[in-house]
Length: 315
Image (cartoon, rainbow, N blue to C red; front, side, top):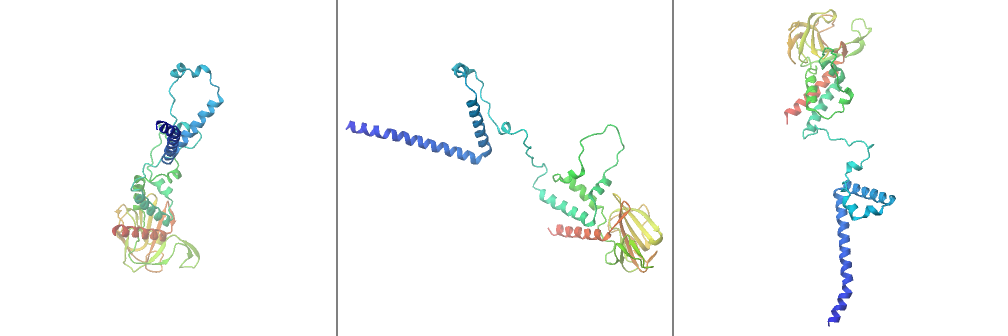
């Protein structure tokens, strides 16, 4: 009977050892596969480092003295290989996420997009505004710092301070309408002169309205001129800062004086028929650095601002 059990043990011992080895091999493969899924970069780095080490060992003959226990005991411990150590020095650096990428990023982006849409609708160059908005310091010898072009800042990460500056500029833009109710009787640009029929350039738009209709400032600013000015008749000019001026011509009455500070929608005069005019209307101009721009585009930008205000109030 004992010989029977001895025979069975002799048969199953190799089988048991084989099962244990196969199970261990499968477990090792599973662990490596799981590590490759969770940390693919680290696994690839380990494989690359192992291949490099094996190639170096195969290419360099090992001396007999280096394999002695004493030599192995004196050898320094192996340095762990990291992804940074194996990275190629010529490879581009990985871009870090912007410091301003927060939960409020989409909200800031939406507000900035609305502001930029208003400027584009009015045909305004943002760089021109920023140039005027920057304070002019005296030239000194002890100045310096890295050169950062304005075009590069256009692609910068969202910055609440940058958005606040943009909204401050927009707050002083003449986006409001000078009249509550009006009809455009003559557009901006080349036209036939109403007096002699010759081609001329109309530097503003004519808004038809009844005599005595209140005329409002289209943005906050300081009255630069208030009085009679040739073909404009009675005219008011307002300086809104950053090189932006508005003109209101053919008034029947002026309600402000030069040097007065006005706010948006403040009454500055009444519609009239003074100066070079064929009937009661308001001649309205928008100028930047003395160059006339199409006021109709600013009125369109004002409608964008009105939609934004209504949307914000309804939330």
